Image 1 (cartoon, helix red, strand yellow):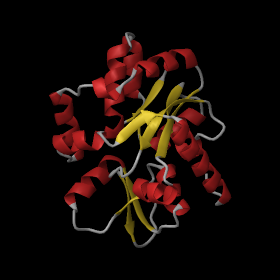
Image 2 (tube, one colour; image 1 turned 60 degrees about the vertical axis):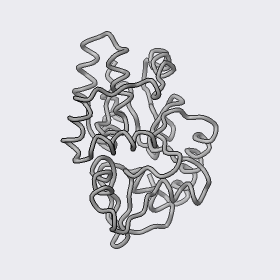
Image 3 (cartoon, helix red, strand yellow; image 1 turned 90 degrees about the vertical axis):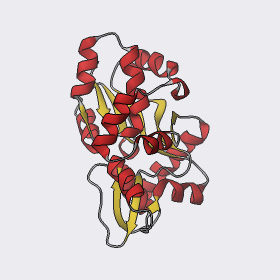
Image 4 (cartoon, helix red, strand yellow; image 1 turned 120 degrees about the vertical axis):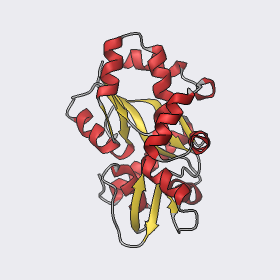
Length: 220
């Protein structure tokens, strides 16, 4: 099984978990090798170059996925819009589409660089797109879902064991991510409290609504 990895802080607990729970050294190597940003991984998945991956929500239409993804219940801090001239972030089609669904114009920035920007620019005007969605629809926002082309049983068994409350992130890994992103270890841990992974009734309703709204606007 080739599992593609979104190399952002928001999936750090899951990747620590998966390393501990997968015995195959070859699979572990493939997960590290097939890592990139959301839109690139989506393209690889669509071309069947990887077996499973967290796929950007807007691209999950008609794909098979588990009740597992990347979810924000309210503000997320890592998907921002800076009001002004419209400028998409090449790394995530879902975040770009979310801004359009919310009828907001500006520069979209996502991921670790957005989280760093948030903390480095406390006085600069910025809009948290997940919070805007929550305020408008009273629903969480699903940024990505765990899709698969094969190995459904193996993935289901794996994800059912996952509980982020019991995942301890080693200090040396926190330090690595902090140095790479420019985000302090304290802020990384605070940020991860805002990320959920299970897709329940509300999350599925939110995903369905988002896909409906993007279809109405001709976004894909």
